[in-house]
Length: 92
Image (cartoon, rainbow, N blue to C red; front, side, top):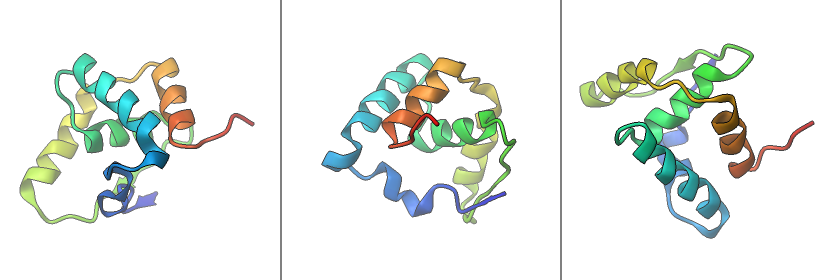
């Protein structure tokens, strides 16, 4: 389980350290019909090989509804790894 997997949105704030991630998310938004950054991040979690179950820390109905739409996003394996690398992950 991933408790509050979006970290209150800190991942999505513009900074030099996550410019590569934002560029990739922008390109994926176009491919996936305007999906939001949070939807793409949740789609990444759902595709994780450990079958991570996110526990959202929100009570806002619009955010919950947006999270439910994530099931329509099926990242490719290449997109998943690209997001991981852009976010600072390393290939073991």
